[in-house]
Image (cartoon, rainbow, N blue to C red; front, side, top):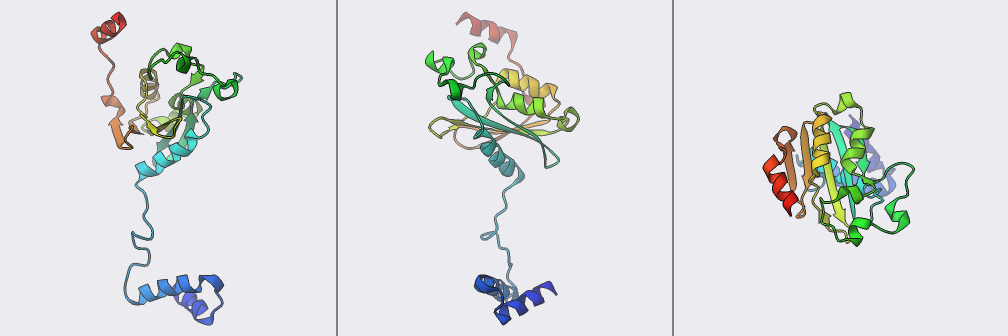
Length: 201
């Protein structure tokens, strides 16, 4: 009935600029074609959808080295979001105009005690309801300052916080843009021997 009414409006010329568009739909309908074909309405998969939201969240980052965004989701509902930046009340690196780790050319994943920022995953967990994070999925996306993708794989401390928040699944984009998915239970800690070898360097 709704479609017949729409057709009536089209035929009467009262739809203004929408006439040609709706006429096209009407023509497809009469031919038995799909009105909303995949080519015209490609819905992203849930993981892609929430990763895209994480990209937008990363734009709030105040880091001058890399921008990260994290989104925690349970049952397709967003529980919380977070981006990397200085903790409340402290000067943001983007305002200070300097990053100690960048000045010292410290590689990603090292010497975090020199960083004033709270990571995106950490902020998302801090802002989230513990009950709603149980069994949830966390999505992480990162960007270098030149706009290229940075690996969204969480650091060791963030991985531990994700585990303790009882988040069940991790999805992030790697440097090539590929979606990587893990069950959080599969994220293992480095062995004691591995850590001792690393400290020798």
